[in-house]
Length: 144
Image (cartoon, rainbow, N blue to C red; front, side, top):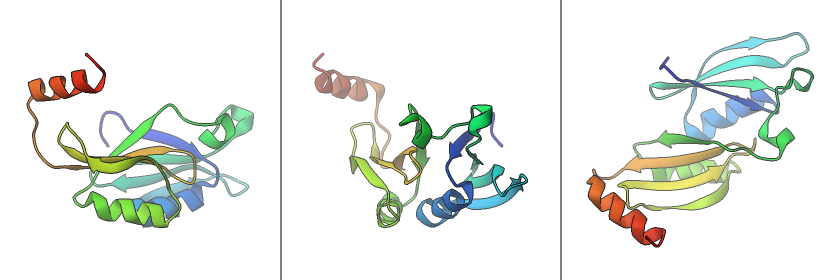
């Protein structure tokens, strides 16, 4: 694992693990089930990174985006063929938040919300962009 590993909460972690595997290419590494059939942890690999899933445990204050009405985070997933990942995610029920496009910072990028309420930025590196070019584009975008 890396120094920081995302640990996200969903309703129905087993279904989410299947969705992330089919739609985003995750590979399951293991799971810890608690009595009653919920999961305190399902470990998923996305390339060289790990994301941990857990079911909701409201009695412990462990709540998903579905319970709290949204999320303030975006998980950034870089792919070699982002168009293929994008199409699989949409076919599997993801909602578009930001259309997939070639972005000024050098990535092909778009944002989705998965069926479990988490936001994902899906990206593919296209080119290295000098910092001054990014700064000019940001200034134009934000009226600076």
